[in-house]
Amino acid sequence: MAQPASRSELIAYCKRQLGAPVLEINVADEQIDDLVDDALQLFQERDYDGTTNTFLKYKITQADIDRGRGRGGSNPIGIVTTTASSTIDGQSVSFSFEENSNYLQVPPEVLGVTKIYHFDGSNTTTNNMFSIKYQLFLNDIYYFGSTEILTYAMTKRYLEDIDFALTTQKQIRFNIRQDRLYLDIDWASVSVDDYLVIDCYRLLNPNDFPRVYNDSFLKRYLTALIKRQWGQNLIKFQGVKLPGGIELNGRQIYDDAEKELDKIREVMSNTYELPPLDMIG
Image 1 (cartoon, helix red, strand yellow):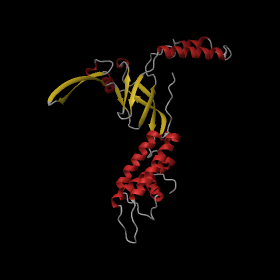
Image 2: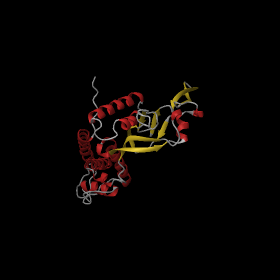
Image 3: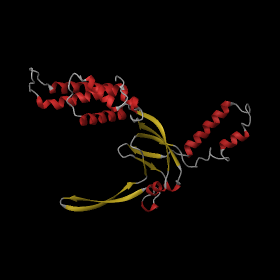
Image 4: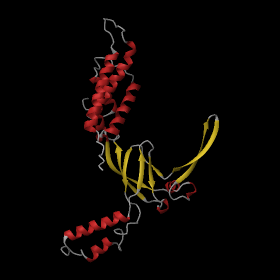
């Protein structure tokens, strides 16, 4: 169908774009499955339509705290010593180095992490009945009209500045190839069953959101990938004549597909990919 809603429908669509069923597309099913995975990976990692900004809630466990504090639970910053050995000039050499263990395992669908929200009670300006915010509401805003909205807005902004200065953001590090979210915090202050709210970008799973298969970039890109594989499979038969004088020209199919892929990637980079942030100063 013209609007594929599944993996098999997307493959059938691409084959029709290449001439099937009039022509036989000489690409194995296993090769096509690999190409679909490659096309989805590029779409999810480089196309802004392939990800979504979402919030994930995570409950901290005792295992997380033990790992975050290092071996034996005595190190609040999560640094452990690792011993390794290597062979140099035919001799075995042992050495040790320190590395972080203060990480949380995150799902492989998470592409990037922006921040985590505060999960402790250190924010004394807003959290309890003795806070400035509570007293402000209790003494000054007990009924509408008792204070000007501008005064209230300026006071709230001042409280937020105090909160920003006294309650720092949690320092995090994340790499998609590790599936680990490193938290550079004092793990001695973390308790079991505390919650983390993670602001992150998550890949769209086409099994959950089948409209991914109908993405215009994905359809064109996968079609060109299959065409290139088709030409590559036929290159070894270059010059072989079929009955009726027909000659296979795998090289031409391959070269045409390469040009199409270059053009598609250029359009994707200029149109669908988020631009890098400029650094000034």
